[in-house]
Image (cartoon, rainbow, N blue to C red):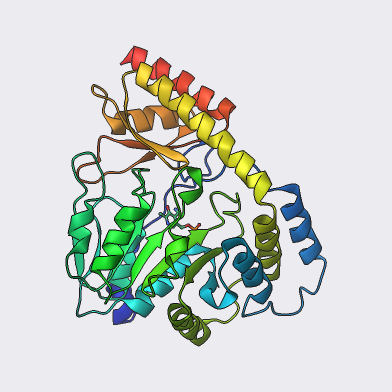
Length: 354
Ligand code: PMP
């Protein structure tokens, strides 16, 4: 705390990112980045943008990119809001659609930023425990609430729920906004974007950080009915009109247009995921079923915290969550085949020693 901080920032409880260590070069399987580079067309588009008009502000309405996204999603561009990474889109959504007098619902084991945003907005929360298999208890999300946020697939568990389950949640919640965070939807889950036309309270949030291999340029977007999108624009244009720079706009547009490249990368990641799961099962691990580019694993006889530190000492970075119910689990991002072989080799060494 500092005497210079006002009461607004004194009461915040920010999440402190500790996942980008700089002490040595790691096999980095801890923040769910795509192990493959962006497509050559994307890199060229970013270079071209860097050589053109950088002295001018970017388009605050992100028209070009929204048109491209409209074409890709079958929606019109007034259904689309673009933000500086989906974290910004999610933060803006919490600020725009949830009120302090009605609790917002999310799972006990889910993306850690939801709690941070709820706290930022002084919101009541109704935290719903996942079931014993770490599945989303759909019926609990049909109880009265002031808003819902569910990642599909969930993080850090990696499991997805069906479109029918989400439809059931939407049917029960016509009065509140339901946000489905589809950060990892392209690795085997089903998107609920087609439901937008039937549900004016559905906001789908996606990112270019994972599937499109562009975590470094910070672009995320929301898809929903124009009333919701207008709300997000109203907030954004009151804070900072120019949230996406010219290079990010150009790179994102090229990425959406080059979907075939990314589809092939995602297929590779899905194959590597299955091979990794098979090897982990042979080593005695329990693996939660995954429809994402990461897996959530536990070993019956070795503490996850011990494994995390032993792996880190040997140059392999995975994610450990020191929190109730999952303190014996590790989340491992699916890397290249070579990276996963290194991970498995080091893991075998550790298990034999233990
Ligand atoms: N949602 C979920 C569930 C995530 O795991 C992440 C990334 N860690 C994000 C949103 C944010 O991604 P970005 O800000 O890079 O778009």
